[in-house]
Image (cartoon, rainbow over all chains, first blue to last red; front, side, top):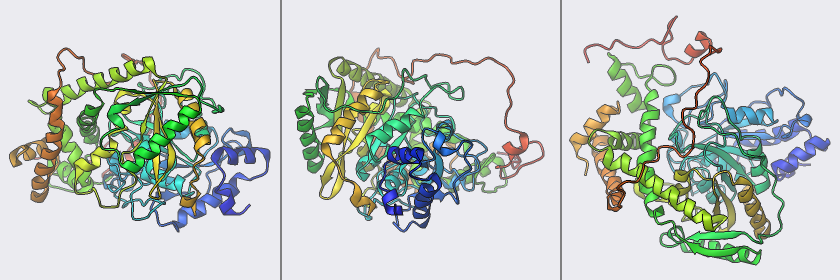
Length: 477
Length: 95
């Protein structure tokens, strides 16, 4: 097989071939490594690419993931390998330990291909807030790949990696997956350990998968879930993640929240969404409108809660233990000047917003209120799931926008997350699958379900994926 | 509306030495975001308990037993000013 043909295999297909002896793991690794390292695709998707495959402890043919290479978002700590969370303040940082999610996948047989570009500290929806420069969308290089996990999304869409890890705090997996025409899965909060993920907003951050198809997402998730003594908010996963197999959606009750499917959704995105609803109905699902009355307030609550948590988490970057230091005459000067020089504009904005929302006199009006809204948002979902198995919405209200288009208007950028933030606040799993093109650019179809309903979610997404037959090969040309 | 004095106060709390230009921009941008967020005040939320965390776990404790940790030299290896036994910093001075 040529390198190009090798890179057309899904991760599950590649693993199968390696296990049966038809393909060698080093050959597959080198096909991806050479392509990713050259960046001939001009995407700026990687911040670091491996020189060669790491020595595996077990022969790859004997592991479930068989040595298939994995791209990992920069914010996952990887021992001895640069991990900067897209920030200048962690310049040169090579962590002394590896994140649990990455370690578990390595144990299951993946090999570390490279680290991917991202918005600084995962704050952004366009990947334009990276100290490494913006990532480009493989469907149109003048457009953004989405964010914050833009590098992981672009790498998988362009065939520079078979699959990739990302993190999702308010949509940072689902939105870029949608804009790049691939599958993005955000699992239930707590399903995967956060140990070794450089924290943004701890009550929302969750690791997840970027893959070319739903089967690969299930396969990657299967080997990441589980309780970890190093993350006291992680939970034992009830049961095993199954590889999806269904052929129809008979008996499945789908709810369509009116608050997330009306105003503000671009017409091309809405048309593609409605067409897939009709398809789901043909496949046997029942479709009914429903309401999430507090969803319109979720974004406001999110943009208080996430910055508040970030302002506390990012206090650790002070020039003492790692990363950048700007020398000054006294300690306070060293702190303030290091942080001034090391953080980019969006990170400063969120630290300021979060510090303000937590400060004396404003706490109750902002942070306290946002936490009450969070309760209402979660209650809305709970009520909806009494009547429905899954809820469906468009993933992003628009297709990929132009580089620079929203940089000067933070609020417009924040509105990119309107359909993804409510699930994050409720801690429930959600997946985005490619839903056809609008003006030549990918749109996404989002499904969400109750906590720990990943098998149901993946099963329905798989049936829709098979029926839709989306062809993403144009982005891998 | 967040004015210049408020921006400077918050920046001090957040340990950020913002430039004059940033102070002006921050005042404008944070005001726009807070105006949007202001809509939350329209909601009737009396008696609604706050959610700080969605996971139903309370006090996840482990047994208090000594375990191996990072060797000191490894922990110090990433520091801008590693000393023999700790992290070097400038004097707290008069501030």
